[in-house]
Amino acid sequence: MSPMHKAQDPHFAERVRASFSRQQAMTLIGARMPVIEAGYTEIHLPHKAEITQQHGFIHGGVVGMIADSAAGYAASTLTGHETGVLTVEYKLNLVAPAEGQLLIAEGSVVRYGRTLIVTRAEVFAINHGKKNLCALMQQTIMAVHGKKEKAL
Amino acid sequence: MSPMHKAQDPHFAERVRASFSRQQAMTLIGARMPVIEAGYTEIHLPHKAEITQQHGFIHGGVVGMIADSAAGYAASTLTGHETGVLTVEYKLNLVAPAEGQLLIAEGSVVRYGRTLIVTRAEVFAINHGKKNLCALMQQTIMAVHGKKEKAL
Amino acid sequence: MSPMHKAQDPHFAERVRASFSRQQAMTLIGARMPVIEAGYTEIHLPHKAEITQQHGFIHGGVVGMIADSAAGYAASTLTGHETGVLTVEYKLNLVAPAEGQLLIAEGSVVRYGRTLIVTRAEVFAINHGKKNLCALMQQTIMAVHGKKEKAL
Amino acid sequence: MSPMHKAQDPHFAERVRASFSRQQAMTLIGARMPVIEAGYTEIHLPHKAEITQQHGFIHGGVVGMIADSAAGYAASTLTGHETGVLTVEYKLNLVAPAEGQLLIAEGSVVRYGRTLIVTRAEVFAINHGKKNLCALMQQTIMAVHGKKEKAL
Image (cartoon, rainbow over all chains, first blue to last red; front, side):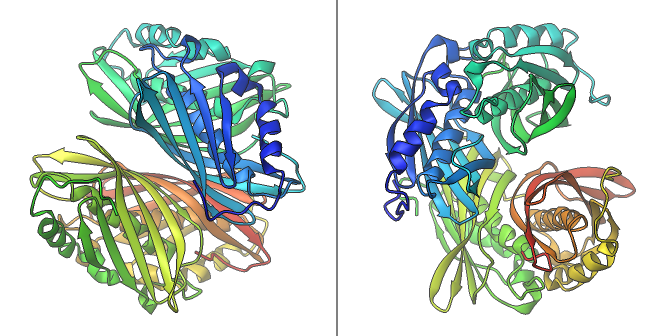
């Protein structure tokens, strides 16, 4: 959570939810975004065979996808409503296989700047009620003023 | 290409091809691996609506997925046939939207070590015959001796 | 701080302090390590002209140096006394100029594994009593069993 | 080398050389910049005891310092003379100890954009006439128009 962040757009949650829902790639893998706060979002992804690698765990690339999106949208909650965000780059450590029934990617803003926003994400696998860390990310986001939406 | 690399497993191409084909997540997005050389692989991904973000370009997270896999499998071409590879971490710069009819991720080994292998990937979008760089990655792979396959 | 970490070597603080004191590069820039806990260290670096860039702030490369070392030694506090640690790689975001009288790099272990340890560091500039974030790092450390010391 | 790059400032070499010479931290460690081309620079650093770690090799943090600077100045060769550059972030893999009589950091621009520039660096240790790779970096640079110099 990011109790120190204050949104400048009072409708940030609706704006982020609408943008997320237009990403067909998120629909394809079955991702949802049930938590949207100022400076923080969560993406939940239930296990299904179609998104696995050869050992039956959720594919590392898919883990990266939801980490990137959760953190990028966390940045988006803090921008003005006419400002888009771009992922400049991110760095992801995969620390354990994504073994379990559900993945939760928690994205949060670490430092908000007018042009560049630094975020982090942690991805946990929920396995029979236990929450295990499987990935950690540090990311750089660029705010593009006058553009309406998350663009990458 | 990596003309300086020599494979220790003469059947590396079959081994990598078989491992790739068992990754259901790659099937889901429509990725193929038409090029497998010693220290180098290519993943090709045709555009389709299901893998886009809201502007109709291929999703940045999907770009990361194929970069990670192409480079990880490039490492796998150089290991022994009883050695698995794990993605320890990677860092990806997204430099342009993935606009075009086809994405090509070119993964290559930069430094091969017995335990740790450093790789790079470049992702290009082919747009009406022009090849544009859209992402650059640097990655760390761990070789796990005695395990048969790419595990993350 | 890392209250969840437990050191396996009861003499970790003496061991880390001795290793740090043998790093002539740390002496050269004037760095000290006044805090050594299980899973956590701090490096303090007073401003002096010799370590600045052309605007009079401490050089970004020096900021990276103390972030890398603080986090690497945080990993070292948790290993056995016959285990060395190597920096595999790190990723550093520089978010503000290092303007002030003192820099403090806070390194901590995020995930401890037998072979690979993931750490983070934050570097703050103390400027007339205010503590401002100037850099954030995520790092991968390898434990080398049977080697006595931090090697890079 | 980067034969595809063209400098917009005809006096880029003098400008970069002057900026480098004002960085006292580079003087402190004994670094020189003997090669400045459009999109490419080299920093050379002779071994001396003051910049070593406890095993007598050049400190990993010092390796990072010259990688960061070589790549940042490579970006600076391509900007206008009234444009400063800032290191947004970098990711560095340390692949071998910096064992030898001389280090050479080769920085080059991979993708030049008006606001963001992606660069890479490779650091080699020259040991009794052999050139060994010891580090690889990927970096993001921001161009700050209307500011005259490298600022971090």
